[in-house]
Image (cartoon, rainbow, N blue to C red; front, side):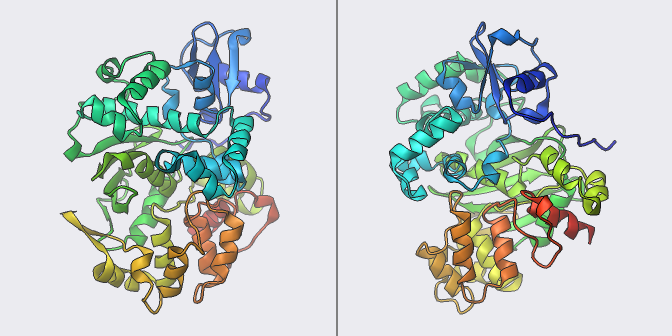
Length: 457
């Protein structure tokens, strides 16, 4: 049965939010969180618990903001595991860019000064803007993310608690213990004993970290996997299985090591089953976020359907195919090079310059070469040099407008290819469909309109 995509109630005032909580509206999961003064916990809007009285409820834009006010995460609805707000993918301002960078683990690796430098602002300006809009600064947002990563490792792996503390990004075991107790009202050992993730018995690190990657609303997995299968690069990616039950795998180059991620097309609920193998566990947060961006799991299909479905030219397509996504990429620089050189030359670059895996997995044998290794290539060279020296930035916090200008200056990169790179590598949801009709009323979801138009032929 096809799920009807009706838009969520209009407005973002507190009365509207309380209505969403009263109706347990999962469409708002990740958009905001509510906290209950009488219990000291915070929840996602769809929490199945008895709806609290309005006078006892407060609303928070992020989990970190709720935690900063002293609330603990609900053990029933696991609010720390909801999909991220689609707003941060839409916004191109400093707050949206900062949130994407924090999700990629930049604060853990480079601290707040590193985050600010990437954004071109002072640390004080970044702190002020994030606190004003999100109710929490970069340190608090990163702390909430570390806590979620730690809970995931505690409940899905058999790793010692000390190793988990540092793998999740904590500076000390004491900081780790204090944070877990503050957010979950449990010690790490008690949290490990709970089976809240439903992921089954804990696994050894060699077996990878099992994950449930939540998404909001319906998810057109078949169309996403069709695209991944059509684009799969030998040695770096593979899609195995039959339609409806396929598995996608690929290698990753990560800040501290390499990884292999796999995700299943078939889903038993509002999530996709995945598994991540890492040479260095500190890369888990970054790997998860890259996989989410590749699969466009933080999208808001209700908002997309409301806007695009209002256009008679797209209404039938939107109604017939709910949950269409605009996939991104797990390796933005790799994707840009592949877009420029084409699939056949990209395959040759993998063999000639790729990094071999210590232990091949199936047909996966290499990590795609870094831009610095391709600067002498006659076709990829100009773009590789621009990526290597930072002239073109494709990281999650890149300024999209500045990147569009820089891409236009790369020799050999056509306007259509540059638009594809902006859509996929930058995760920009509002790129005008090059070579297809463009209507301003599709904004800010023109990338999704292009997906509907292309899949419909």
